[in-house]
Structures are given as C-alpha cells and as structure tokens.
Length: 122
Image (cartoon, rainbow, N blue to C red; front, top):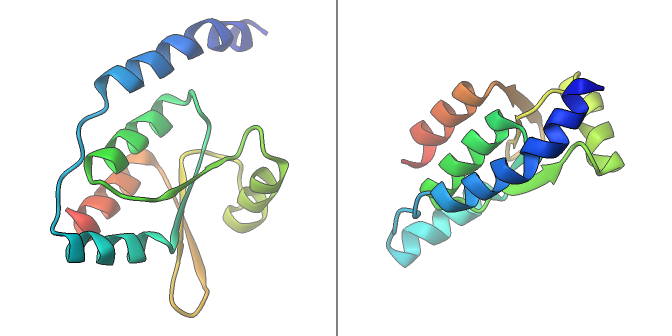
C-alpha cells in the first residue's frame, strides 16, 4: 500500500522529468530512416508508464529516432496477457523482437535492450 501511494505521488513528476529531459533524436537521411522504420515494425516495447527502467529505454528509443510500438502492459489486459504468455513473466521493460519467419524473442532488462538497440540502429 505504501509503495502504491508513493508511485501515485511520484509518477507525475517522473513523467514530467522524462518529457523535459528526453534527448533530441538523431537525424538520418530519408532513405536510411525509412529502412530503420521498416526494421522497427518487428519490435514492440512492453512497458509501464512510470517505471524508471522503462523511462530509460524510452529515452534511448527517442535518442535513436526509433518508431517502436509502445505497449502498456499495466493498463491494457491484452498486452498484459501477451507479455505473460509470450515472455513468461509480467516484468518490464520487455522488448519483443519478431523475426521474418514470425518467431518472437522476448528481451528483458533495460541495459540489454539499450545495448541491442544501439548495436542494431546507432
């Protein structure tokens, strides 16, 4: 109960801090950005809005100018269930990576997600 109340109080400040400090995205040539956008269609980030680790990953997504779909695993029952069934746990952030054959890989841990995004798109 204490932590739930604390999150309710601190949550809006965390979102305000995120909005104020999100870096400007990198600029690519239009054809390069089109390729990046195409690759991002196979990615989805399952997240909670005020989770500090999710905020960290969203900031990196913005910095890299990536159009990755954000899925709210806390308030959307379908995304919550997909994360539980596909990833095996309701733990965020989680990046769902779908290959060309339709196979999905679920990547947890913000540091691993950020490293993956930087290796693939930086």
